Image (cartoon, rainbow, N blue to C red; front, side, top):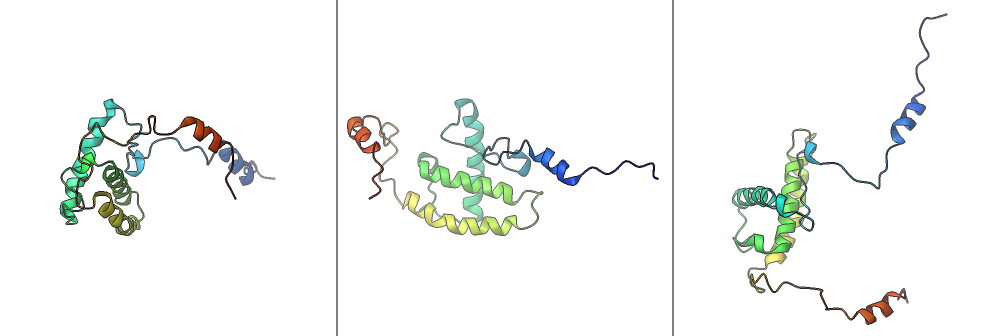
Length: 160
């Protein structure tokens, strides 16, 4: 006979730890892995300056380091929402890829993502400000859709 207790059952321990795990609920911060994700759609005025300053610093470094021409990322990049979204995503991915917690695959993964993003960056600006920078003329859905037509359409699957 021994004086030791029986070890705990590993299946029971895992089940207990996983009981609070919900894979469809994503909450918490990504900051511990080197990222501060910015959702530009829900960004508050109080958080805006820090987000813009951080992104600007990275965009200026990125365009010099990778020799990205003004025909791809113009000096007015921040006035083009599609460029902001792409550059922001690259910024976040770069921070995570080069975080000290990465096992070493992050940098090559980031460069693979960059190669996929370059055509999108080229298309986002396409060498001109054809829409201008008039902040009072963005695309709007306000009163653009006939609500009666929409309601009639939305009541059917249209899967034929």
